[in-house]
Image 1: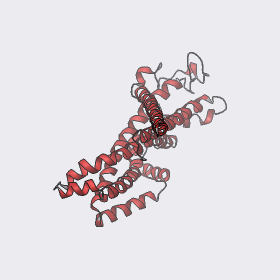
Image 2: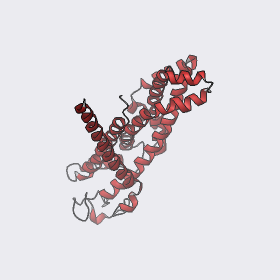
Image 3: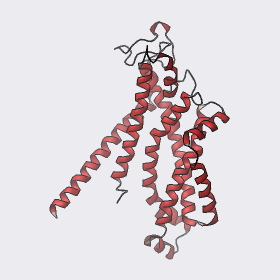
Image 4: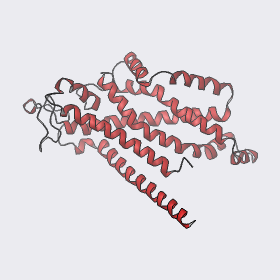
Length: 279
C-alpha cells in the first residue's frame, strides 16, 4: 500500500516537472515571438545586396537570403506575426465553438440537430483544401487566411464542448443545482463550464502550432503573408530556387516550424496530464 502511494507521488512529481518545463519553454517562445524586433540583430526587411547568400557565420548565425537579409532576424520577426495571428484566431474560434457546443449539448432539440449536422458537413471538407479555396476567393492576405482557417477550426471545439456538456448535464450535482432552483445560465456558467474548460484549453494549446503551420502553408502558396514580410512560409517559398546553392534559406525556417509544432503539442500534452483529464 505504501509502495503504491509512493509510485503515485513519483508519477505526479514527474508530471508536474514536465508541465513546468514545457510551460517555461512555451513562455520563452512567446516572449521571443512578441518582442522579436528587440531581439533581432538586424532589420528583417532591409536588403544588403553585398551580403547576398552568405552562409551561416558568427556575423549572420543562419546566413543571409538572396537580398542579403539576415535569416535569423527574419525568423524571429516571423514568429511574432504567425503567433499573434494564430493566438487571436484560436482564442476566437475556441470561445465561439465552446459556446455553441455547450448550448447544443445542454438544451438539445432541433437546433442541436441542425447545428451538429452543419458541423458534420464542414468536417467533411479537408482543412487545407477548404482554406485554400476560401482564401483564394477572398484574396491574398493574412486576415483573409485567418478567416479561411477559422471557418473550419471552430467545429472541433463545438463538437468537443457538446459531447462534454451532454454527459455532464446528467450528473448528480447538476440535477441537484436544478432541483435547488438554479437558473440555466447559472448551471452552465458555474457547474458545466469549469468541467469543459480543461479539455478546451488542451485542444487550444495543441492547435496553436498546427495553425501556425497552416498559415505558413498558405503563405507558401501566396495566399497569406506577402513579400517582403518576414514570415516562415514566405521564406520557404523564396528559398525554392536556392535549395542547392543556399540550403540554409529553407532549412532554418522549416526547422522553426517543426520546433514550434512540437513545443505546443508537448505543452498541450503536459497540460492534459497536469489537470488529470483522463481520470
